[in-house]
View (spheres, rainbow, N blue to C red):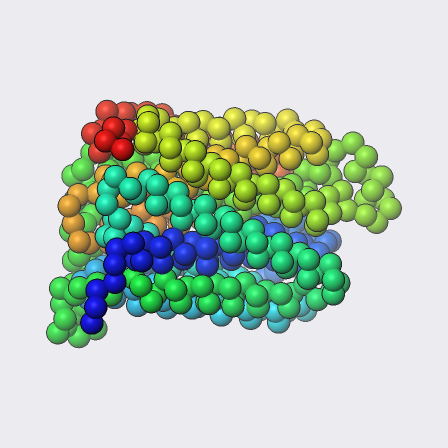
Length: 440
């Protein structure tokens, strides 16, 4: 069988961001949360607990999905590296996520448990596939191009998901909001369809244990994981980056998940909002929320590209620290925000920094890895830290809403994590592998 050229592999890899980011934008950030909150405007009861803000229940459900992944993916990644199953596992999780998104069309107000279960499965599919997807970056992309390709992936993801969101938004306005849930099937079809391109060109990978049965692969997978864990603990720079990444990911990913509900709730505190609510209107309509998210998406494209160029000139740590500092300022700005124009500006800065942080975290970690073929196992540690961080971040935010009932304090609290993440990043200055690409 003829080998697939490296350029085609890289292009196919980038297109997976285009494929699966539709889930992140439509299901996590915009349409699905809007449908969920519209169903349960007066709060919701679940397992004997009354959630005054229905989005706090959805946030906790997402937290649960990340907790499952935190235990599941490290074992699977060890098996994937040893058995050569990286692409196969990536396909499985991707398909699970796409099917779960499509089935959300059956979610109604009377089917709360179904909606939560499918949202959890879609989250597991999305995040589970990313573990193996990210592991292909150091395998198919030379080190000096990893910042650029990682940024290109996120840029394509922001663009593709934005296009699908616009299409869905137009269709909703044509047929009416009562049919919104039926368009979740488009997310699944988009994800499943475009991912075929990726899976047609990515390498299958070699297996260390070709003749091992499933039990032997499981044992070997655990041993592989232990070996990788020891290498990480012995590598001071890699260990320090992962701690910094944990702090930053906790803030960034939690903000992405709660951005839409936060905008909706914070708008209710602006001048004139009380009168609108009294008239049975929303302080911030779904159309306005979608515009805010699209601002974040398109600024995310610019951010991923510009911070990649900054990394080429000044190095990964300078570029990533700069993006993290922007997020730190955002947390304080969110606490004092008092008008819709300020909210739009906040979304713009958030999107710009989001593109830089997400793409540079992935490529920076890839550059710090030792010379190895166990990419899935190494990226499972990266992923498990991210999932634990999201679990803690979303759980704290959702729990805080139950207690304080003020979204401002929740976002302000996330600033503490950005601060400590920034301090840890700055300690990594001088790492040779993260220096500017002077030969570019």
